[in-house]
Amino acid sequence: MANNKKNASSNTWSKAENTKTVNTQKATQVKAEAAYNKEIVDKYKQAINSTNNSSNKKVAPKKVAETKVEEVKVAEANPVDKKEATKKPTPKKVAEHKVAPKAEKTLSKKEEKLIEKLNKKEIIKQKLAEDKKSKKENKKQAKLIYKEQIQLEKERVLLEKQANELKIKQETEAEAKRLALENEKAEKLANAQKEAEAKRIAAEQVKAEKAAKKAEQAEAKRIALENEKAEKLAKAEKLINDKKIADEAKRLAAVKAEQEKQAEAKKVSSKKEKVEAEKSPEQKPEVDETKVLSKKDKKFKEANTVEVKEAEVFEVTAESEAKREFIELEPKINFDKGVKGLKQKNKYQKQLTNKYSKEILSEGAIVTTTNCHPNTLEHIIELKDVKKSYITGDLETPILKGIDVKLDKGDFIVILGPSGSGKTTFLNVISGLDKATEGDVFILGSNLSLLKDSHLTKFRRRNVGFIFQQYNLLTNLTSKENAEVGQNLANKNKQGMSIEEIFETIGMKEQMNKYPHQMSGGQQQRVSIARALAKNPEILFADEPTGALDEEMGRKVLEILVKVNREQKTTVVVVTHNPNIAKIANTVIHIKNGLIDSLEKNSKPADPKTIEWS
Image (cartoon, rainbow, N blue to C red; front, side):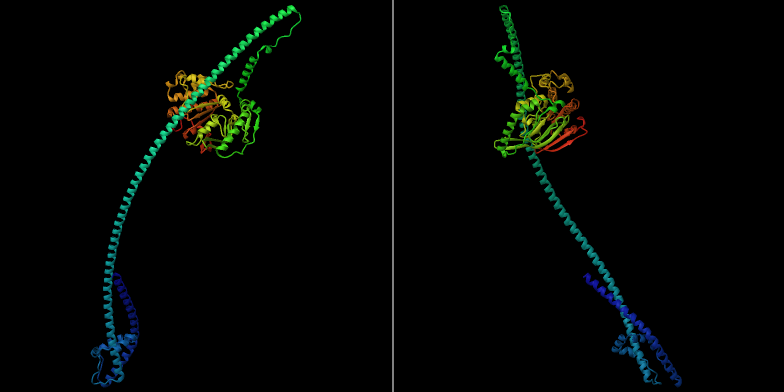
């Protein structure tokens, strides 16, 4: 409706504009004709005056005709309007304005035509007046229509505004409803997620508790096994020492008996010589003492000599290093796969062990199966293509999957890795507690992979010290006596700290005569360090040394290890799950999935007092 009114208003204004243009044109034409008609009127007046003067009778047209001349010109200028005026004459108006001459004078045809023409022009003028009035009315009507259109437009705008406001209000209400529904939906979803998360957390907690319980049980079993192993080891060492003492006592007794027997034999021989000398002046040859010894005595002496030789362990020095024999074996690769192949590898390794073990231990022979040439003066530990697998029934479980690494003498080394990554197996292999399935494990130049178990034990006693998480102290011995157990296995050719110096280093001098049950966990751990240091080892291995300690005692233990490393130049290897401990090391090894994931060097190791503890 509003649009229709607007269109009507536009049409009205268009018509008004067209009318204005036409009127302008007409006015121009009227002005043009007005000049022409004025001349005719002037001539007409002169003719009338001349006629009146001649007859002394003056006939004049009405003033109406004079005043209408200009309008007649307008009518002549506009043929269209003139035509219309001609076609539609108004008889009444013509009669009203007709100019009639006086009765005294008869007008000529020319004058009548002129008068008729003037009358027609008067009609045209009236028509123009009517058109002007009509135009004025049209203009007025257009103004009214325009005002009406403006009012309608205002109403339309108001209606549109109200409609828009209503629409906006409806949209706002709809949006508010939508947001309310979305918020409600989001709240429901958030509540559902919270409930699900709570359930998941609860399930994880239950799972973690079970895993922790299982881990505790496994740890308890492992601790029990380690304790049992340590007790067995201590008993075995004690038996070996007792046996050595007994054998030494037997040997001394045998030597003494032998000496007494030789003295007795000398007495007997001297008596015989005297008797013989009395009988004959000829000289008899001296009796050889070795011939006097019985066969049994000879065997005993030879056995003691062999035992002493077997106990010797090659010591690496700058002089002895140059004399070491290098033996390179061709690697054997035609093994089957799986458990069968693993058994074949173990059998082949046993053959090599039987052949080269004694030569490696006593003579320092460098035997390689992987074309490795270890630099024993620079690298204290060197591994090449080391693998370790276990057999469970018909199943092979690979733990180490091919490790190559070189570690320098005197370094403080930290081994990191997640549970099950193989870091403990790696420690056992490089410390000689376990043997690799494949590859070469060179420690101080000796290939531990080719040593017999008995020779491996001798190598560990001579060169390696251990610190375990569970201390493994002998409960019936004091702190000092536990340390002396390690000192009895020490390398006699290498000068080390005394027991008193060691206990002073670890800050336990006042607890030297205390038993393990009289000390805290941290104190027992420090005594286990003292026992390891008493051996004066080349390498000190520590498996989770701070795992069972609080922060204060853990820091003290780390301070002792750092002090031993820096002052005694002892190579220290620590396995831990705490990444912060790695900051005190100058070499950090990350093990993942049985392989070395990264090896980092730290030129500025931190002080144990400054590291974070988690």
